[in-house]
Amino acid sequence: MALTDQQVRAFHEEGVLVAEGVVTDADLAPVIVEYEAWIDRRARTLQAEGKIAELCEGESFERRFACLYAQSPEIERGMDIMQMRGPATFAFLRNERLLDAVECLIGPEITCNPIHHVRAKPPAGASGEGAGFYNVPWHQDAGVTWEEADASEIVTCWIALVDATVENGCMEVMPGVWKQGYREHQAQGGTTIRPDLLPKVTPRPVPVRKGGVVFMHRHTPHRSVPNHTDKVRWSLDLRYQPTGTPTGRPFHPEFVARSRRDPSLVLTDHAEWSRRWAQALEASHGLQAHRVK
Ligand SMILES: O=C(O)CCC(=O)C(=O)O
Ligand SMILES: [Fe+2]
Image (tube, rainbow, N blue to C red; front, top):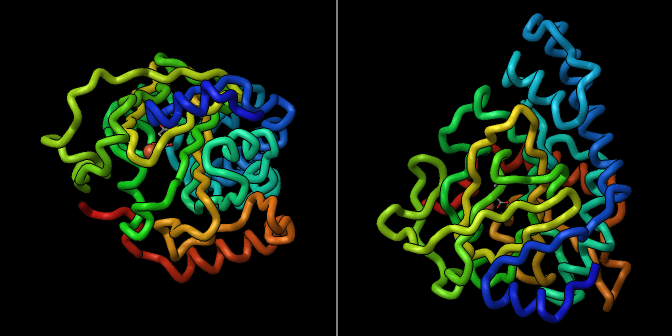
């Protein structure tokens, strides 16, 4: 979905843009089916190991992971894009509607940055209110790359797989602050902006419906709040940048997702993408991915 001029201006002014209806339910359906199938297999493994009693088979996409997580947090082990490497997710990384919007922000030569995650935020009753992968503390995404990417125009695309609300733990952002650039981060309590450097700006919650996207500048401070519902807040966070600029994760595989100049550069081979990830994860084991300042 192409963004309007007004949306593009808002993004460049505020460093954040909430755009509803960027991708369709049909675009997301194969991705959701992929996660459902993975969770089903994982649940059966845990059941065979005696770690869970109930498979929660009749539950919806929004409920099943919560039902399983309450029995064993091990349900989530291995559930991320680079570990699962599913074909539907790989295809979604080149989703035309999403890339049409991204193109409006960074131009038509688009590389998929290797920092991308699926997040299934369980109810806080089971996963806690503390900072971590689910309740991410205040940070800029530039804080989770190496310095080599400081000048790269990396745009974060936070995609709601279910409606994200204040109640179920959507994100909060600080609009306009990106203009002041990078702030030092610290590693204590999860990678987070040094408390003495945290801007004194009233945070804006950014709820967004399924299929909507929160676009963020790499210097926009954001965090995510605990999930106070009994359902799961599912989302994808993907990042794109102009081809040829450093990704900040040189040890993980980037790929060309769109090129108007030379479409043959686009990686469409799922097996190749998966192979590159498998090799990179093996070779980069134990490496410090976030900068420590
Ligand atoms: O999904 C979340 O809760 C936090 C995501 C985040 O920090 C990001 O997408 O960069
Ligand atoms: Fe982030």
